[in-house]
Structures are given as structure tokens and as C-alpha cells.
Length: 322
Image (tube, rainbow, N blue to C red; front, side, top):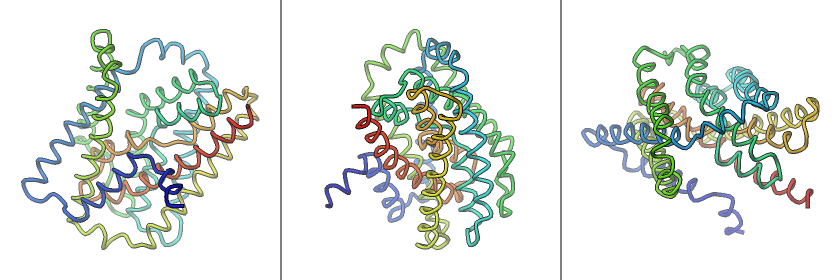
């Protein structure tokens, strides 16, 4: 029973939970906090540089052809989800900063790796999934901060709107490295492909650094006095309800728009997912250090819930097609 339960958690999720536990017990303080924060910023820059280098121009042009599918994924990710997120702000008994985290979750782009993997398992249109997920992350660099500025500026008096310094950070920590990586792809693309394992370490290591820095700062500011076990349970319940609703909507959308089975699977998985890899560094840029830990709680819970749910759904699709 325990082995089956642990099999639902990928190794990275266990590392993520261990990082949160470490930050709760031994948060970085004083000079060490500055060192960890600087290392996290360097990791973010390298992360987006490598993501830019991995995205081929051919994939961009090929993806533009299936515009109806990509538009449906875009509207689900950046219109439907945010509308539902705004509704979550009015749930009774929810703390203002937790509501901010739930709304921030709904503004994030789709995942890349897991969306493609689940589409492949379910016998969907893998090429279209690559394009939709890549476009979502590319556009999300600009759209997510814009939606944060529009919808989160001042929830609960937190003053979390996007300032000029935040815009500069987005440009120089996220956008510039991404564009630089993409422009250098003709020279470094082969290396990025060959060193896939090293790239994966940088990808996940940078996220763990940001989480340790963010949660450490939040713990020093009294995170676990602000968020109770009841708050965590409520966040989990809302994440489950949110995912179930979006999965149902995207399934009916695929049928209603007349998509093929393969394209409908792409809409189901790419349209219902939210990216932890993008959410962690963006939260570090857009929110004050003392707020990031609480804001990221819904993102991390939703990430694990979507992995479990989509793994079950993908396997069911695969069994049907055999």
C-alpha cells in the first residue's frame, strides 16, 4: 500500500517536499539568505536561457498551422482559468494571501514536459502538444505578469501589483535570457540536446533553490503561524475542484469544436495544466519575499494533484485505444 502511494509521487515532488521541510526547519538567515537568493536568481536566468535554446523555430512555424487548437488551449489557459481564479477570491473563510496564491495559480501558462508526456501516453497528437505547450510558456512570459498586474494589484491590501522594478526583473531575468537562448540555438542547440540530463538538473535545481529561498523567507516571517492545517486542507479541496471543472470543460470543448480524438486529447491535457517550472521563478519576481511562500502553496499542491489525475486519465485513454 505504501509503495503504491509513493509511486504517485515523482522523485522531483519528493525533493520539493523535502526542500519545503528543510526551509521550515533550517531557513536561510542573514548573509546566507542573501547568498541563497542570489543563487536562485542565477538559476532562474539559466533556466529560461536553456528553455529558449530548447525551443526550435521549426516548432514555432509548424505550430502556427493548427491555429484553432492552439487558440482553444490559449483561451482555456489565459481566459477560462483566470475567470475561475477570480471566483475563488470569494470563497468564504479563505485568507487574502492564500486567495492571491490561488488566483496566481490560474494565471500561469501550461506545463511542457508532462503535457507532452501524457498526450503521448493517451495516443494524442504529440506534435500539436509540443507546439501548444511551448507557445503557452512563450506567451506566458508576457501574459502572466500582465494578468497579475491587472487582477492581483492590491488583493487584501497586500499591494502586490507589478511595479517598475518587477517589470525590469521580468525583462532581464526571464525574457532576455529566453530570447538570448533562442537566438543562440544554432550554436548551442546541439549541446542542449546532448546534455539533456545536465539541463534537467539545472531546470529542477533552480526551482528547488527558489523554493528554499522563498519558503525560508516566509518561515522567518511566520509562515506556519499564518497558514493553518485547515487552510492547507481548503487549498487542496479547491485545487481538486478547479482541476475537475477545467478537465470537464476542456473535454466538452473538444467534442463541441469538432476536434479529432487526437487533438481533443491535446486540449484536455495542455488546457488543464499549470506550470510549476514557470510559476516558481515568476512568483519570486512578482511578489515580496515574505509573500512568495504562501503564494506558491496552491501552485505546488495543484501541480501534484494534476500529475496524479492526468496520469490516471492518460492510462485510461491508452487502454481504450489498445
